Length: 424
Image 1 (cartoon, rainbow, N blue to C red):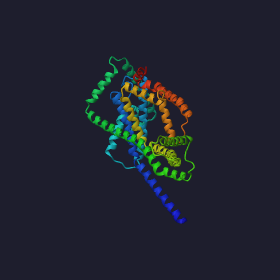
Image 2: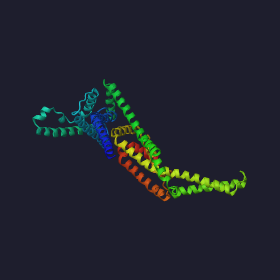
Image 3: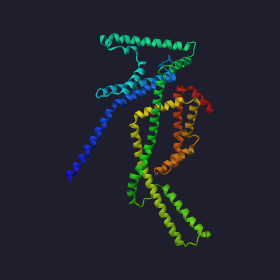
Image 4: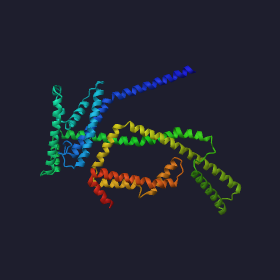
């Protein structure tokens, strides 16, 4: 028995190692395309910001008439995506040197990334390799001088932008009209539409996966695996029917109502006269039925605990393996939020705060917490529920107010003003 047992385990171990090696190989082979795609999406985010907010020009103070706080926000977006591009391109080059890839789509994506990044690369970094070989120290001096001159030019442009005769919005409008009449406008529009459609599909598919995977995992693991094990384990212990005193109280109330109804119908002679012995037998049958019902309910509550843990693990695995989808979903949500009007933004903020903060709906929190306790087979402790309602909505309201004060006033001052007027 021992040799066959060890031989079988060795075969299973080899199979697992072979499957793991195949998985790692597939991941390594797809690394160049995956890294290039993430860099391309980051470049597309920068390109969309340029088109929508800077009149198809580079993200800088000279291209738009924004305040200092708003420009710092866009600059943060720019630096974040440029960092992603640099990291992913380095990953692409490293993995590309070990694999043989040739695809026209890769060249187009690289060209698009280079066109976007070239606007934000200092001129001193675009010097040919010959000048780099000749001297490195003068290059460092020229680099500092170039950065200083670029800073001066940007400051001068920003001052001229503020004190010019024509407003900055008119300049952005003229630049947008020029971009619309350019020969590449139609091709660029089709490309942006295809990217937007692909991003929308990916975001919706990822949302559905986040919702369906935990629900289906919880349902099937409960009914196919956990619930049969719990019923088999607790079937031997028939004395423990109720998980808590609340279930026992409900069962006693239901049995008492059944007994009172039988006696009431017997006194009114609605049904044929029943002897006390028959009434006792019917009450005993009803007690057995109620016990079986609450036993199944107890088993279901215990199964819910383990099934919920398994669904939580499945949700965590989906999130951990979908970093690219999360970036796309974040970009998708940002586009939707920034596309809303100020009144729509204020309406959604007020609606979400009034619903989730709970000052106007404490009974809603009671229903949710009691349902959650019943789902897990726990007694609904009124003191704990009231304490939760008295503390958690206050903390949630403080977080919302801090977010509004810290970010909304800087991102959309008009939306903040609209929200204050709606609250008043």
